[in-house]
Image (cartoon, rainbow, N blue to C red; front, side):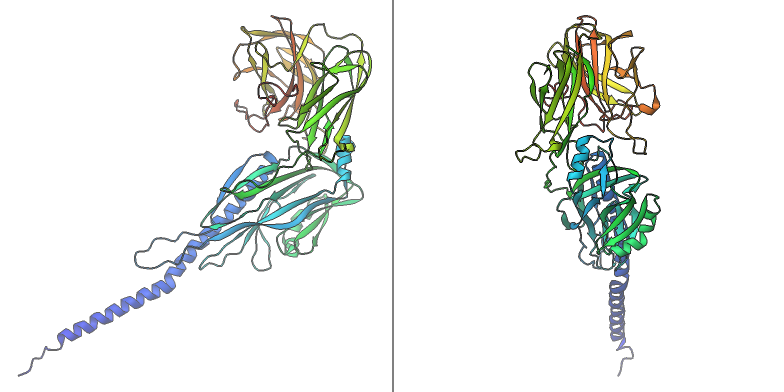
Length: 563
């Protein structure tokens, strides 16, 4: 006797096996097609993020070179896939970011104009104007998406597919008649899912040198992405649109020569920045001093009255250098420095300035020499020395009395800092260490030095002609005169603004790193104190920023110069 349903269980098993096979086939197809497609989208988004990060790295480099601020950006060199419960992701991609050697930046066929300091002209003519630099490149290594390398060269960020150069953010080193060249130093090479990259200033472009051509044209050569011919095809038209640029020409495959109209004047700023992984130590040594210039001199002074003598040390990028020793000596005429002696060695402050105070002893011509063996070769080069001339006259246009230079002891009114606000006025902070308040009854601004051009035309910014405080207008430079409204400096209040100097002329406002000499006479004691003040920056809310140390000297407890 037979059973008609005897094969039913086998049919169920076969069906289950078929369904399982279809499931496995579907999973395999999904793993082989859908997962890679999804991961490719993840990688593409990561590539876009990394490209934006490279633009941020470029911005960090420019900020470090022109503002002197360190900055860090984490570059998304890899990608993170979504978690999967059944399906399998490949290993996480890890791209690299690295620096590589590039042709030097060079400036050929230019000279400093006659309005620049003599030593600036001499040094510029004696040096090559060549500066080492690197490119910075992000090289992706994704599993699915074929991303092109992204490089930072000069101030531009570029994508490099095949033999093409596609600008992503073509920041320009040339704006009007201003040429800003920021070089990149350091040995950066790091890989992973993300790499924190730090840009540290090596030499900050705080000084501008006005240059012009030695002939009808001059050249600035800068590295480009490879190939330079592709850069010249895609980016150069925007460069040549500047009326000061004559033409651009590829030099080999890695750089381009930009030819300028040599009959015009240009504001040249140079800077160097170190790029390193955040976890790495700095390996780039900051440049030492290369030449010095005089900021004062050629003045008529009264015997017995102190006058400032200030030298500034600069590096090969034309920027100030701190910590360099400068020797001052009275080499002709009758005079001595404050606290006695005809020779004095001073260490430059955070703004590269070495100040002393000269007191003429008798009428006649006085010559002071400042010198420093900056290159350490045992000789004083012509641009490592400068001389100051003074004409001393008998008597004084001020009343008599002792005058202390940069007081910093107990019982003194000590300068804490001078701050140039964004509106052009100056806030002064003093620490009155005397046992009671001190009242400023008379004052004088005997010297004011501006740091750089500001009008975009290559002309030196002029110092303020007048400063106002205590409801009194003071000529710059001027004589000691009474304040219409005496100013009180409270005791022991170093964090409070003692008083402000107003700049009534908007065209000659104070700016960070300007230098002035201010004399105050105190009503209670009849004493006079003279302060050498380098201005810091300020955000107009009472928060200093952007300066390099204000009026403190090397010891940190008083103004610079009287070491």
